[in-house]
Image (cartoon, helix red, strand yellow):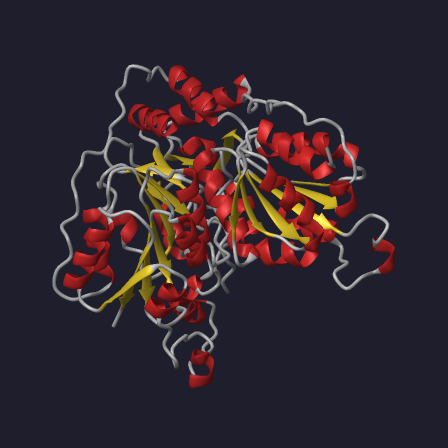
Amino acid sequence: MNGAESLVATLINNGVEVCFTNPGTSEMHMVAAIGQVEGMRSILGLFEGVCTGAADGYGRMAGKPACTLLHLGPGLSNGSANLHNAKKANSPVLNLIGDHATYHKKYDAPLTSDIIGLAQPVSHWVRTTETAANLPKDAVDAVVETNTGAGRIATMIVPADCAWNDSSEPLAMQAAPAPGLVGEAAVGQAVELLKNGKATMLLVGNMALTERSLELANKISQATGARIFCDTFFKRMPRGEGRCQIERLAYFAEQGVEQIKDMEQLIMVGTKPPVAFFAYPGKASEFYAPNSALHTLAGVDQNAEDALSRLVAALGADHLEPIKTKLNKSPKGTGELNPRTVAMSFAHYLPTQAIVIDESATAGGGCYPSSAESEPHDWLTLTGGSIGFGLPTALGAAVACPDRKVVCIQGDGGAMYTIQSLWTMARENLDVCVIIFANRKYQILQIELARVGAQSMTKKTLDMLDIGNPDLNFVQLSEGMGVKATRVTSIEDFNSVYASAMTTSGPQLIEVVLP
């Protein structure tokens, strides 16, 4: 058994069942090994950013890693933007990066690069395998790392000769360590803050955004009057009927500051204190007041559900019933086709247990509030801010949950970063509906241009933020990659096409041409 075969068998033994790949010559023995064994599904992406974004979506929904298989440093670099998003989401992802054979590296061949240096900024753990015999142990260590805490990015660099040389036997499953428990002092301090009469908020994220954790946070809110918030961008959140609602921090700094201006105390659970996405001249970076009391009940990698449960018990709030959302569907949009009416219809027709991937930016901003009382669903957001996240993450979520409808609400500018995702959706016949908000511009950047105090509004300036002339044709782009597509210019047409898409299987794209 060669190194590649032992590596793949070890990954399968440890629950890694999917590989999103765009390989090259240095990965051929790993490609062959995946092709020869049962238990590992291989999915080809036409761009490495599709593979890494798909692994992010898969990890968020499956709760365990897929692996990527990428070609040397340039292949890793092409996938780094979506690994950045995955790292900010604390998603479990395992990267396999092929490298030149150990004895070939001294020649500085054209594709030689500093893979470790490229991997470290987008990984929690990086290791280069030294011999074929080490591959199974390195693979087990990598999987354990991905499953540690809230989830991590592990990158294994596999020299080609380690893949083709004889190796040792595959290793069996090794369990990851359980998330750490918070100390009694952290719970006790939270109780003191919640009982001192001051205005308090709980900011919850990561492992504190499970359905059970939200119910516990709701009990705390009922017992103490504390307000419950989540970050603007979060890994995954259950929403809709039967789930507990929480407030979401606004994106723009001045709105976020206004939202929590009366909060004197902040308790973080699974996240960190809220700050602005960017700095702005003359505006504070922190959302919270300078004299606010800050307390972390549970860190990102600690057991947030356990911490919240103990806090509920310490507050004597166990007897309270969580207040859950009742179904109250938005009416479907009528009148003009605009972001508001599309958001209404999006929420009206959203099916039970849908998975929503949100990279809709400004034009789709109304979809989130409109769907607060829709059928139960999960919502995934752009945690790292690097656009090109939506389409591949939808792809990965659909692979992880083939029995659930995936709806990707996507801005037209961001879609073009990873448009190749459509081809893979078609090839794998994934149940994804993509809604493109086509406003022909980077609208968020036009807003930011004014907000940062850059006053130039000349045609030359605005042309750098405009993606018209020529207009992109997403119907042709989509159909050229095998995905059925429709362009709509009225709300009536959108309602008809979208309602049909929600009750039929397979990949579809709807281009919403906004005025």
